[in-house]
Length: 204
Image (spheres, rainbow, N blue to C red):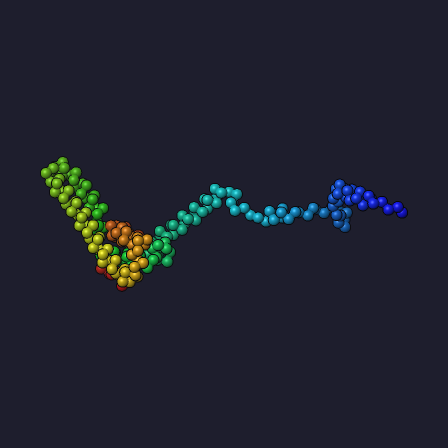
């Protein structure tokens, strides 16, 4: 046999040019081609964004609405464990109990304004000379109500510091505005509802 140095290179070129033959199984049928690694990995990856974004957003809104309804019901019934986290803070509970225990002049502001509105209509048409006195009474009530809230907050602030420390009245806690806004609401409309039926039951 004569050795041909170019035969090996020719065989290699034929092998590269020839199509890859699929292995046959015992029945003589070709098996499926083995998937590439990147294709196999891509098949396992789930998209971060759901296909139906509208349905996903709708489900998220419904879930949020159900949570809000449950928290609102808890505030109406006094269920402290299911109220929003902001309403379960210890010093906020104390603020609510303290405000609910006293008579606040500002809580009658809404009915007072309504009465004064009808009174001003009557006085202006029938007794215009009393209009000035009506305005004096109205502004006097507003000033006294504001003073009453300021006095309430001054005493409440001292108690909060003594019981919970300076953190309970820090600027970020908004304890002052929380107490003021609750004092300006009528007792029956307050949420969360007062925990006691009567006034004068001060928190410990």
